[in-house]
Length: 488
Image (cartoon, rainbow, N blue to C red; front, side):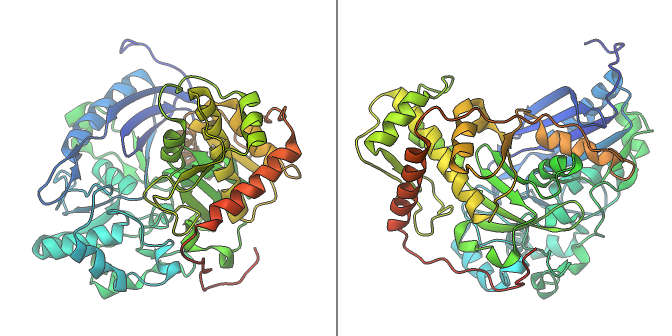
């Protein structure tokens, strides 16, 4: 596309910062994708720790935003990103960061890991269990403070990832509830207040004002706009957490209580109707927020990496064979959790993933077993969320049509739908642009899974047996979180 060509309809730019890739997309205000530019999210080695290249991302972002503005009559820009990222900054938006942004997938020094635990509060202060590696904004800030207390003392703000880029663009600092509630450990979403660790560690001065995800922070900074050739008319929104904005896409479409299961490296389940007293941190359950600040029950498990382990190599582009799934069910071939480094929904199962029954001998059988295993993990997530109503599936697992078919067959008395869009997070973020003026449901394309061609009763009996075997080697009992006992 040359610079003189403009596409009607795109009015908002969405910056989507993933762990591996970063995308800047031109979207319509109805959440329809028009054009996208992307770059890898590079991680550099320390010292003082592995960190993301904020300078390089900034150069790419500002140049790409100028390019998209030449292609489209953009009026707004909004950011979204994963929740395990915080950036400590000084007062000047051109001074990239006070300390490098920590890569959450690196191991922690034992002293940091052990020192943080007694400071972290109860489940509702954290919104999750204490996760692996360097997850959680509060723990990252604690690490920074232990390594370089002087720079932390001199810093001005500690910002979630979407709000960091909003600050770089607008110069206005902000915090936002979906990001804070994405297991930052900084915010108690039930009590709507900062978690005790914030005051306890002297961090209140670093916490910016809480703003709504759809709120306009201001126009793009004039000096930044002129430097990079970006129109000064562009306004900057607060932005929010990626999975929460994907959920918002369904809420904006008229499904406020839908249970949304997004799939990729993680299986992420979110449901605003889940009773808070049923959230069990020992079963990978978390407490998130929707854009309105309403508590949202969630569950996280690294289903994508487990899928890859079960499927093996060589079947990436091939669809699973339903007849082979039926054969595996008939023979009693099981893949049992967990193949990753975390327990997921089965406490004590990390690293104990195993196969039982006659082996899946061919690559096609392994692929069929992986899809069946993914459907069972999803079924377990839905059950943990106590959801007997509408479930919407989206994400990469839907590249295999049999996945949605199996999930639907495992819950025969409830409705299951799916969405094939590959830009759900960006769509939800774009819908923020008209949050306060939208009077009709936003468009979304939903489909019903094809019926399972095999023996449905045999499938459900297999699922019950799978759950029994999966729990057989559980090494720790689950304990529900103590807290509110409402049955919303």
